[in-house]
Image (cartoon, rainbow, N blue to C red; front, side, top):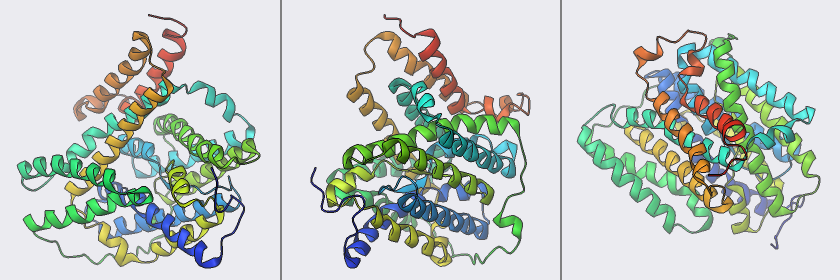
Amino acid sequence: MKLRYGLDEKPPMWQLLMYGLQWLIISIPNVLTVAMLAKLQFFDDVAMQTLYLQKLYVVVGLVMVVQALWGHRMPLVVGPAAVLIVGILSAQSAGFNAVYTAIAVCGAAVFLISISGLIGKIQKIFTPRIIITILGLISMTLAPVFLGLIFSEGDLLFNFAFTIIAIIVTFFINDRLPGVWKSLTLVITVAAGTGVYYLWNDVPEMASGGYAIRMSDFIITPEFNAGAIISFLICFFALLINELGSIQSVKDMTKADNPEKRISRGCSVTGLGNALSGMLGVIGPVDFSVSPGIIATTGCASRYTIVPCGIGLIVCAFCPPMIRMFTMLPDLIIGVMLMYIVVLQLAAAFNMMIENRCVTTFNHALTIAIPLGIGIFVALLPLHIVALFPPLLQPVLSNGFVIGVLIVVFLEHLVFSGRKR
């Protein structure tokens, strides 16, 4: 593919800023989805919801700049890791500080793995069937969350009809928008959906968020919970595979040199970014795989165009009124956004199944189906059943994603390995 600007080429300043603006437009919706996490963790505390999103914008912007200049040195969009949403929501019983301490610890572990050269060995564990199952598990174990959001308030029949129509319309818009403009799908859906919702419901007053002044609101108090750390270690293996896939997709497209060095540096920065996120009490970042499509559309692979985008995200963090608007999104709209992500993950899993032709026997199908079935079973366990588990193991045993990943690795490498049926 012929590129207008290569990895290490700098476009003229005005083009650099325009490309950076394009990346910024793509990045903002990625962070939007985490408004749901802020609401679920802080309920009606608008100040804390706003602060959560502010800190997240800073971390994502900072990691994006560091990756472009010193990490993998490629144009990759950074955003909150979807797999960590599952971990955070499943481990809430361990407590806020324990959850984010676990993220910080696991981020540091990813950094150590990256600089030690163990990434290649870990990569061999995750076969295409395991990756397909992971994508499916992310989707299925988030189902109870978006169901709870969609039916949390208002006219339930209206919410039911609205959700079905909104999902169909969203994918229709996504199909009709050309090239890079597809990245605006979620923004259009959220804006239009919120407008329609408030035609039927009262518009709330925008609360005054202000700034939190206690240091404990900015940095967590470390609290080590073995169950939470084990649970997040499994999530971080999935995050690492996501990171590797994103780096490799751009590496192959741009024919980047020193691939091993880029992968090691990129994963190291992602690990440090997650360690920082955990200490700040926000979800960790990961590189997204949308970048190749954008590079193909614009013909620009310059890593320097990502820098204005990262700086722009950091600037957004210091605009509380804009961020506070995200806290006004109705639960129904956030639920629809989450369902959209779930459908995309499932579609990616099915697409990968077709492209890799990795399901050719009944045992191959069972390797994927059994973990998905058990994962959704665990995700739907009633709270009074979860309460029966030993407190130390609750974050692990009540996490459908973690249980599903452990089972698929067991089935793939020990039960159905080398057997045909």
